[in-house]
Length: 276
Image (cartoon, rainbow, N blue to C red; front, side):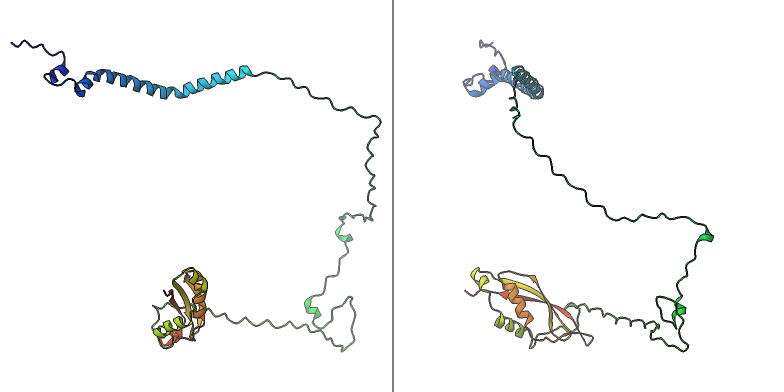
């Protein structure tokens, strides 16, 4: 049998013939104590967290009780008002205001209920049929035989009915018409017209504003331009300049549907580009 002593615990057995000065051996030796200490600290912190409202209320009550004990009753003595000066005359009485004079009044006569035989019947006004050949006046008066009246009781003729209001025709979309509206001499002439007539606004040029202004307008049945609107602008005066130039365009060839001229809504992009 070997004469070597038996290991006291599993740590000595694991680290037998090894460097026990290594940190792992020390950690394994202190593992139980560290676990016990960590468990106790964790439970203590948990209990402290759970009881903190109760402790805070108890501590607040102690502080409030201490402050109440420190309160003192302070007697405040108010100064007496100054004495009245007997030589000073009393204030004058308010001026007397006379009531307004009485106005004439008329006694209101209460209505009296009478019997039917005591009520005087009033003469009813004449019927319209009785006034056809008579003049209306303040009193009844018998006229001369063969007399004539200048009053015409013939009712005036009814006013003529108002003329029918024609419902304004809604413009059609470009995709719905058979023959689309066209600028004189075609689309190339349209863009040439825009480039020759648009004046770049000074504010937009100074601020480097450039881009595309989208306009919409209606080409009427006669080819004139109506209802010019800005769908998307870029500011700097470019929107107003584009509208001005489009409103000044010459008449277009109107769009047609089944050979008949119709209103067509047209969308036109206007480019504003700064030359370097």
